[in-house]
Image 1 (cartoon, rainbow, N blue to C red):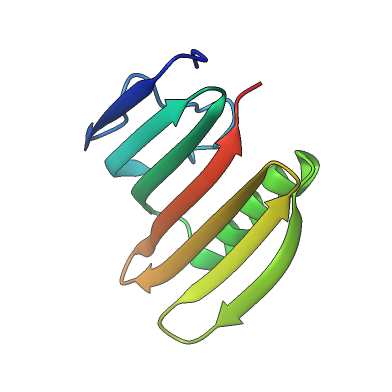
Image 2 (tube, rainbow, N blue to C red):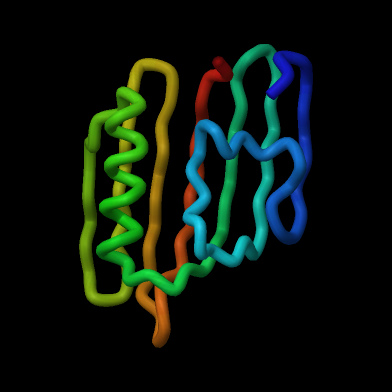
Length: 115
């Protein structure tokens, strides 16, 4: 992602989406995504549906972000929705999963530093 101002949103995965920083599950259908950034900081939103169960999705994201230096700072679990918050000095990620009949809906919001 460029360090200059960037903004994109739409259906599917937008061209400027930092997939090297915010993982998109391989089997996911990307409903919407957006990225807005300026001066090395950016905000990312991702809304996907995956065929995997929510437990698998959560484990994958937890592993991805903790390997990248994030620590889990909060979890709220319920039968219809689980929310996980991960943080590090330069960013925050909020991950919300909701089980669906065949899979999981995933909403991810992140504020991060580039590079």
